[in-house]
Length: 190
Length: 334
Image (cartoon, one colour):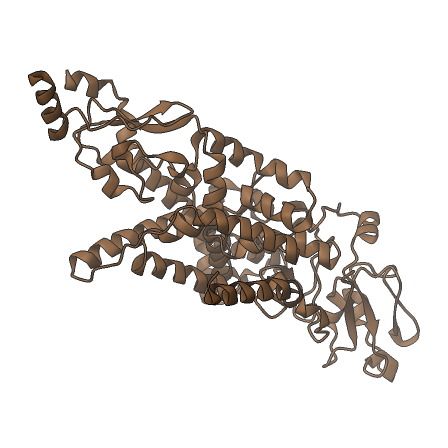
């Protein structure tokens, strides 16, 4: 083997070894807070199942699903995501029906299956920002929630309390009138 | 006698190439129309016509005009056709590219049955018709063939385009590397370098999501590669999907064959063949995509469809050609 070919092979081998790590580099970037569409598999399985066909966004009546470029690592190029502050998911469950790859599992649009199967994340209230906790009764997040009294309950002065039933659709974060928002969805990628 | 033989050929084969262009164009127009339909649907779902911008109202009216005869409830009915050539939904029936199924299987090291089932129809058709997808359906083919014509025009204007030849087996290597990389990274990476998937996606991004992505840049590079380096080079030498379809279509039932009695060795078929095959010497092989361009160009109707599992071995010079006549004259003299 010529020396030049040997060096080339060495480089190719190094790239091949580094690629899996490089592809998942985004796992350590906590600043990028995104949700996967409702009914998605856990992140690793999602990436390996998704075939990047783009149909989930095409059926989304709310047009909340968008696609990654390179900003989240090579492995998630062209995979769907939702930024809840920009547009939340209305839990219509059409994306699961249309997904051919099973990366987004089909879930019936009923209360029980949604509570059971949708685990996009969970909303968290920042009490130092929330108006209701500052003595100004607001309650916008409670009214935006598609599962009121199940996912969010309100107490005195309409202070929101998120329960464990929250599926993480992000409509509360979208509707929060504070800037920056006082309620955020913490994504559940496992 | 020759005329009698020529009349036996089914008249439609000569015109299939036009039909193919109709098919390619229809599919491309569909790929452009579907994102607009999607945008229109979301306008309908929002019940907010009065709040649309003037340009959006125009789009709304135009798409409503086209879809009104087809649907009573646009917000629901227009869901019937979604997706691209890579994976689509037609009236609840899902179709996917075999490469998508292969990519998912290698990335997740498991089988998701519905996806495999949705790829069965293309696989079955490929087993019968060979690599027909590449010639008849792929939206990139339309652009690549127009690109070839553009190269011919440039040639005529005095800008010679290079026509290098590589080993055609390179694309099987690309397919194998793609499968291995998908297994290593756990991500179906071939979707990022497969032009039909790229085109469907990028048209959708551009119309509905406001801007082309990285795939468009890659596709432009493949066009430049075809133009400047090798004619139709991406499909011939690199495309992993083309490799998979070629392998599946190796023992296809319907194939183009040369009728040696009618052939006059004009070699127009070789010149017109987009994939650089050798119809003149019966060299079709697994790469032939049954695009019928050679049938359409043949002046003596010497190429036709036949139901065979194998190509004919080289039948020698055509019987209407000068070479064959010379040989037969010497044979008679001897």
